[in-house]
Image 1 (cartoon, one colour):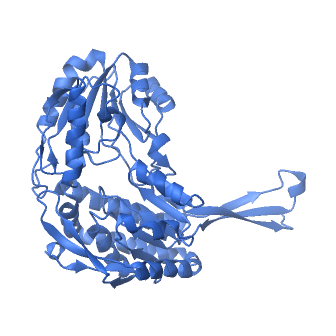
Image 2 (cartoon, helix red, strand yellow):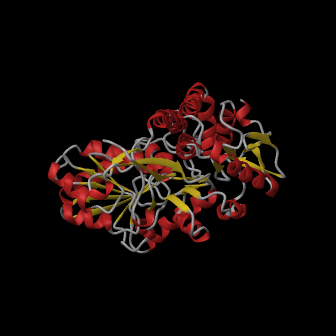
Image 3 (cartoon, helix red, strand yellow):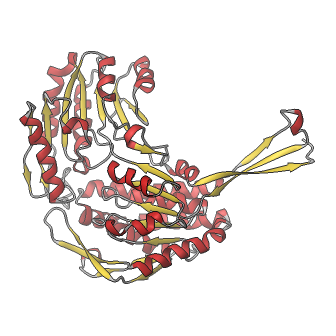
Amino acid sequence: MDAFTPQPRPCWVAGRPEQGEQALEVLHPFDGTEVASVAVPGRDQVERAIAAAASVAKEFRRTPAHVRAEALLQVSKTLAERAEEIAETITAENGKPLKWAEIEVQRAVNTFRFAAEEARRFTGGLQRLDTEAGGVGRMAIVRHVPRGPVLAVAPFNFPLNLVAHKVAPALAVGAPVIVKPASATPLSALLLGEILAETDLLEGAFSILPVRGKDMDALVKDERLPVISFTGSTKVGWSLMEAAPRKHVVMELGSNAAAIVCPDWTDLDHAAQRIATFGNYQAGQSCIAVQRVIVDRSHADEFVPKLVEAVAALKTGDPHDPEVEVGPLIDEDNARRVEEWVNMATDVGARVLLGGKRTGATVEPTVLADVPKTAKVWTEEIFGPVLVVSVADGVQDAFAQANDSKYGLQAGVFTRDVQVAFEAAAELEVGGVIIGDVPSYRADQMPYGGVKGSGTGREGVRSAMEDFTEERVTVLTGIQI
């Protein structure tokens, strides 16, 4: 399949494919074999991409909504037609099991379809001003206008759908977008560039630039790119804000998501299965993968063995195997870090109930208990297949433990008690509370983002469209209502 030939893939500069000054090798995380090489654009190419985005911004903003909507719908349909090829590409560059790659492609199909729908209905409104005497005879027209070209910085863990969550809303509102994909996983974004190039979008409406992270400064600091949409680590995210303090920055950062099993929850097998699966899907490399498991003391003795059994049943191995559920981490360095954090926890008293070992870039699905609350596996985002179990004495103690974090993206609360559900929504310091399930649930059309160290702004197609635009008001005088 062409997706796996080691030929240089072109970058996309103002909608056109170009070779770069250098090439970047993309390696398969499972065995380190070369998947492909991609063109790394030079400074002149980066400059031309920025200049093109800036020069076309006004014209693109005025492109009729139906034109943008049809282009987005075309992308959605093409992604669906090429789903098998794209899923194989995701697995090859990212190492996630094929079953999860196929789900990611379908989500990207939906993301572009949602954007096509929103492009047709995203508008402002009229506001009557005669609510005060001074406003008699006046009417305000409120419009949403793009802030300007968007710099989209995407992570490796969802190399297609998290690019889609930046590109689709930008194009929907008429904002040119420049994508900087993760250096480890540029292939899916470049493939998306091929599909975008088949549409009738204006030249300059998009560029895909797989520059290395150390060379990203030119993009981050350029004033012609007033909006930055970033998904990635907390450290890098806050450094971007410091580097571009006058820009509008939307960030989805890290988390150490908690799943709470409340006293009223009776289906412990179901909770154990869901937590096991979504603590280890993507090898735990998801910002809303379950990391901290907080179980009420009344259930602990029965629930913890069920959780260990469910985790042990997950099949690990070659991610191209359709039966495999847990693949490798993105590279061996990250696997070593996860292994080190587990060892650090055991050094201070944590017990390994399952796993804890590493082979190359693959870490065994791991369950830890008796972890001190100062250990990194509790306080930081491990971004690996590790679950940390803690026991709580009642719902309020569970909520307090979940809030004992510098992060706040999403939390899952296994309860059927409506009062507890509302208490969770009120008490938990997170951007989203998932009742009756794990924190890993995300619908691509809903607002998604965090509080505290988990970021600022919201993704989700319409929410991102609102973030990428600003309200402008026109007041009409002499109006009879």
